Each structure stands twice: as structure tokens, then as C-alpha cells.
Image (cartoon, rainbow, N blue to C red; front, side, top):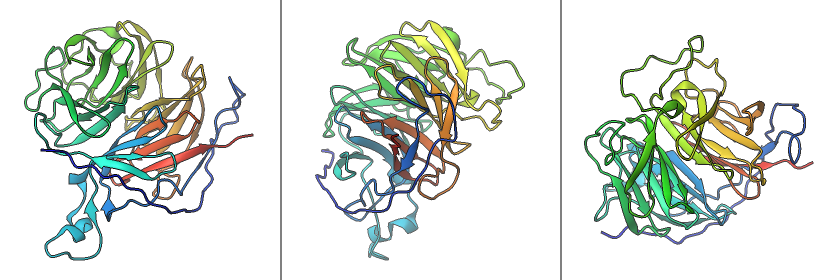
Amino acid sequence: MKTPRYLLATAALAATVACTTTSDAPRAAAGASPQFRVDASWPKPLPNNWILGQVSGLAVDSRDHVWILHRPLSILKEELSAAQTPPLSKCCIAAPAVIEFDPAGNVVQAWGGAGSGYDWPKNEHGMHVDSEGYVWIGANDPADNQVLKFTRDGKFVMQIGKAGKSEGSNSKVQLGRPAHMAVDTAANEVYIADGYGNRRVGVFDAKTGAYKRHWGAYGAAPNDDKMPRYDPSSPPSKFFNNAVHCVALSRDGLVYVCDRAHNRIQVFQKSGAFVREFFVEPQTRAGNTTAEIAFSPDARQSFMYIADGPNGEVQVLTRTDGKPVGSFGRRGRMAGEFSSLHNIATDSKGNVYTAEAGPGRRVQKFVPVRD
């Protein structure tokens, strides 16, 4: 079954609302702690009477095109009145799961769903567009233990793992509700944050899917035993917990991993050797302050932007030492606010993009405020 594509664009413009960091930290690298304003005109209104469900994946490609992955099955029936037989009202119908936007916010194409030769997720989660333009998709339903690879126009290329039963965090053939991925094109390797079921980083051949290596917290073997809830008064856990939610590769060859439940980022060599860890808003007892990480686009990638869902903020940290230097946003539903902040990405111009799952169901753009 061929996946549908839509080459469409729309035009609309709205107001821009200000939003800046709250820090007066000293200037670092190319300037002060980054400041941003929300661009409420981005993206343009969706075409074809489309509506989004929970947005659970976000990526920016080499052309500064923005990609999102959302969950059509999360859309409420009453929101799909136009899709009923007969239609109950003029709006709306579910958008395809994968949507590509150009830098201006126009829809370029959209595709996704069941097809021949692969297991489309029951619950879409996490995406990555590599430097060659391939689109990678993760999944986190209890039966979703696979990562999918497509061409940019939705042609299926490869699947790692399979739907069905997980085999645990030390399996060499099966995944466990994989949350996110990042590709090292030069080494031909894909790093998988594996995930909601497993508690590890898994590394596989990016062209064949063959297993190469894996590790857990501190570079040790992962452990699938039941873990206590996060408690900031307790010593740091020796193990990852659900979920190992993101993985990102820096230009200087380091691997950054989101241990979301423990409010921390752990940093590794590509071999899996542990380098350091840092905590983000560690007193947040709800956990989950480290949903995803993105780097500033300057040559040294001086800053990290962390999607902090429980506090409804993007945390800004220096990459060398994890020192907090600012934040922006707050919990809410207005432009520049966040409800279920889930994903974050940056483009080459320093714009920050965010995606919201849960009740948020949207993507937003934040533009740097220049001196």
C-alpha cells in the first residue's frame, strides 16, 4: 500500500508575541544567554481541513525544514466531525502522521500510516531526519518495539525490531518502545533511545539495522528491575528508568541521553564510556524535566535547550558544564506557553521549535532576540 503524499502550501500571517529568558547570566561564547520571542504566525494554518493530535516527534533537516510526527488516533471523535458519515460539521479531518514544513511555515508534504513491509506504530513517538534526508520514526505503545526508516517522501526503507513482545534491555534483535534516535552518518550508525520499555542506548547499523552495541546508565549493563520513583533527596540512581527519552550527538563526538524520569542528562563517548551527568530542575519531584535536548547552532554548540514538561519551560544550559543560564515559557495554552512540552529542535539560524503532546497538540517557533 502506497503512503499518501500531499504537496500543499497555504498563506496566512498573525501577530508575534514576545517571550525571553529570565536569566541575567554573564555573556558566554558568542553573546549573552540566548533570548527568544515566540512567532505566533508560524506555522501557517494547516490545509485540507486538517487537525493535529498529540505532537510526539519533531526534527529539523539540513534545509531548515521542520518535520513533525503526531498521533492521529489521539484526536477526539468530536474534533473529527467533518470525517463522519454524514459530516456533522465543516471541521475537521485528521492530518497524516508526518508533516514537513518549509522555513516560512507552509506545509510541503505529508504522509504516514500503515503500508506494506513494515509495522506502523500504534502510538507514534519520536523522529529524526538524518543528514542524508532519511526520516526515522519511533513508537511507544506496549506492542511497539520497532524503529522505522523512510525516504523523505515516505517510501519505506528499513525496520529495526518488530511489533510484538519485547525481549528486554539486553536483546540484540528487539527494541523496547523506542523513544528517539540520532544518526551518525560518517560512522553509518543510528543511536536509539530505547526507551519506554527498555532502559538503554542501542546502536545499530544505519543501513542494515544490524546490532552493534548498547549500554545503560553510567555505561554499565542496563537493568530491567522495578525502580523507585524519583526522589531528589536520594542518591542518583545507578540505572536508567522509564523513559530513556532522547539521544543527541554533538559535533565534538559526544552522546547526550535524556534519563527523563530522573531529571538528568548523561553524556557518553560513542563507545558508551561515561563522561558526566547533569541534573535539570532536580527539585521537581514529578520527574520528567529532561524530555528532549537541542543544541545552539554556533560552531561550539555553546548552549543546550531542554524541554522541561512538568514546569512548562525550555531550560537553557551551557553545554560544557550543564550550568543553567536561563529559561523561557510557562505552563499554559497561549502563544509562548506550554502544555505537555515534549520535543525541541533548532535550525541553522538559531530558531527554537517545540512540540507538545497531551492536551497541547501543536508546534511553536521561537525566534532569537538580537542585540
